[in-house]
Amino acid sequence: MSISKIFKAFLASLTLCLILGLSACAKNQTQTKADQLKVVTTTDFYGEVARAVLGSHGKVTPIITSPSVDPHDYEPTTKTAKLVAKADLAVYNGLEYDSWIKKLGAKKYLTVASVTGAKIGQNEHLWYQPQTMSKLALTLAKEYGRLDPKHKQDYLANAKKYQAKLAPLTKMVAQIKANSQGQKVAVSEPVFDYSLEAMGYHITNKHFAMAAEEETDPSYTDIKKLQTAIKNKEIAFFVLNTQSDSKVITNMVKLCQEYKIPVVKVTETLPAHQNYVSWMKKQYQQVLTLQK
Ligand SMILES: [Zn+2]
Image (cartoon, rainbow, N blue to C red; front, side):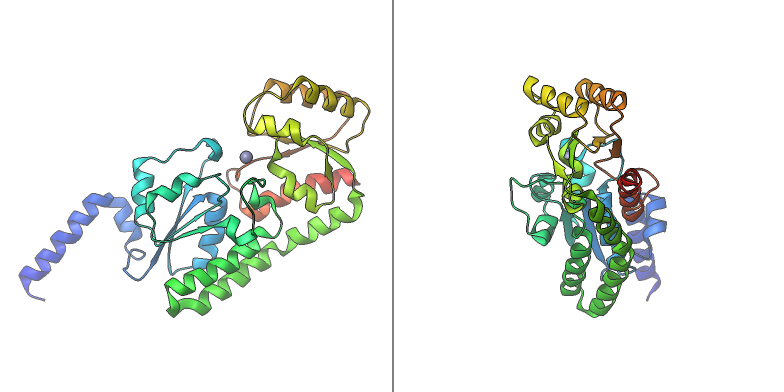
C-alpha cells in the first residue's frame, strides 16, 4: 500500500467512525466485517435466540429492549428504520404484532408465525407456546446457513445448544400438566394463554381478556361473570399481566385476594436482567408452587 492509499484508507475509516459514533465503531470493529451477518429482531426475547444461534458470525440487534415499551404500541424511529434497512435478516413475530418492520426494507424477513404455523386471527403471543423458541432456533440455523453456507454446521450446533437450555421448561410444563386436571382459570389479558393451555388449564374469560388487550373496558356482563367465578371459587388462579394497568383489573386482583384466589404474575415482555429461560421458569414456578 502506498502512503497515499494508506492515508485514504485512514480517512475512509475515520469518516466511518464519525458516522457511526466513535465508541460504537471501536466496539464493533471485529463484528462489522463484510461477511458477517447483520440480524435485527423486533423484541429482545427473539433477539436472544437469534444471537445464540448466530454465535460469533455476526451481530444481532433487538429493537424493543425495554420492559416499559409495549410492543403493541411501538412505532419505529428513523434510527430503527436505518438499522432494519441494513439487515440481512429481520426476525419478527407476525400476526400483526410487529408488522411495522415489514415496510423497513430488510434484505430478508422471517416471521415466528411462519415457524409455528400460526395464522392471522390467532393469539399473537407466540413466545408463550412452549415449542416456539426451540422451533425458531432450528429455523434460524437453516436460514443463517443459507445466507452464510460456510458456517452452516456452527449454526446447527448452536441451535442444538440453545434447545438444550430450553429442556427444563418443557419438563416444568409437563410436570404442571400432570396436576392441572383441566381446572378453570381466568386471565387479565391473553398473554399467558398458550402456556396455560399447554399446562392443561381451561381459560374461562377469553372475552373479558380480549377487551383488556385492546385497551377497552370489558363489558358489564363479562365483569360480573368473572366476579361471580372468583366469589364461588370456580377458578384455580387468576393470571395478571403486571405490565398493564386498569382499574377493572386492579379491583379484580383485590377481589381475588379477598376470596383467597391465587394470582399468578406474568409479563408481556422480558423483564430487566432476565433471559428467556429464567423469565419463563419464574412464571411457571408460580403455577407449580400453588399446585402443592
Ligand atoms: Zn399482548
